[in-house]
Length: 371
Image (cartoon, rainbow, N blue to C red):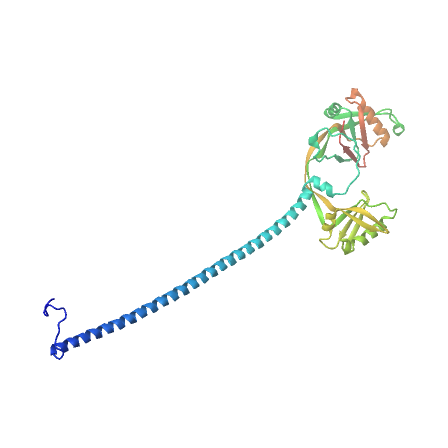
């Protein structure tokens, strides 16, 4: 066993000054240790409290974050729903605009497409008396010339059967026509008159553009029944029927019976009445005690928008000028025809002759030469 000097604890007498100093130092150390322990305990409690606060704050932040995310999601969905509604409204508006444009185009096409136009116009019974040779001509508008040619007094028109005869007469220009002795010329045995032959120039249409206009207030009523009543009575019954709102009509401003077709034009005082009736196409009309199916068509008016004319020479017709008034109408016509039928005079077979005495005027009608 170690000696007392080597012992870890030095034993001092209890009442010695050294022992007292040691006790004091030991008490100080214990006091410092206690204070450190208390400080550590307080620091530990503070750390635990801070940890709890941080945990609570973290949980609170987590909840707030979850709520914010949820709120953002609702707002995003609300924004998407609002955008979808806006797009739906925009598409509805575009659909309505396109629908209106389509209706407008249908109305325009109705009058630009001949096939659709024919289906809307009144029916007319036709009899086929010809033969279409070229299919290309089926969709063309064929014009039949009907030319009114004014004739001055002291003139005559002669149409020959051959164009070369007319050309020969024109080239000779002046002709001495021998008149036979008649009652009007008792003092003369023979009489000759000098006439001038000139070509006949007429204007023929080379291009024609017709603009059709649909009346916004009028309708054309066709397929009317034969009731054996006068026109005015029929017009009264039609006006009475179409003036009623329950029949789709309105107040009638005017009515007109077309004698050439047996159809009736009714004009209303207001816009927007004619179109619905036209769209129906046919309607049952109460006339007297019976109902009759009539056709309702648009009332069209045509105006010549463009007409181009070109001069044309009649190949077989000659105009004679300067004929004096020395014979009555019939003897002068016979004398002219006899003269210009003679081959020795440069003439040929006469197809037609018209004569207007001096002091008078006339009108000759030229039709299409189908010869």
